Length: 117
Image 1 (cartoon, helix red, strand yellow):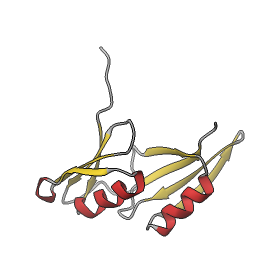
Image 2 (cartoon, rainbow, N blue to C red):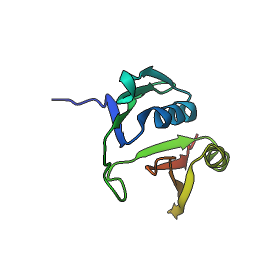
Image 3 (spheres, rainbow, N blue to C red):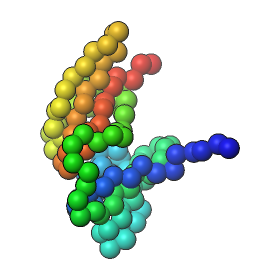
Image 4 (tube, rainbow, N blue to C red):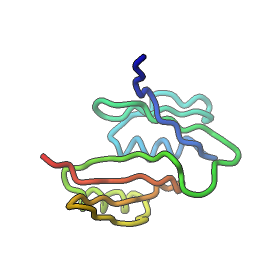
């Protein structure tokens, strides 16, 4: 058996604005709004869909699954995300590898690392 990642789903109390934010940040497009209860985003390039589903009470605290992104210029990308409404959580370095933990406008954490060419 082989599994392929088709979609990454985030629980939220307000899916449409969060989906729009992620579509803008990933160069993606909203594929379906489903009356605002389950919104899907196709990110630019290859990869799984992102989905945002309405829940009355999303799990509190640190999310157990998060998104990891790479960018050619981590510093510039992090600054763009902060300007767009993300919040810096922490910066980390380990064995010459660095990444920044951010939170989206809904508080979901994700990481941005430098893409090595």
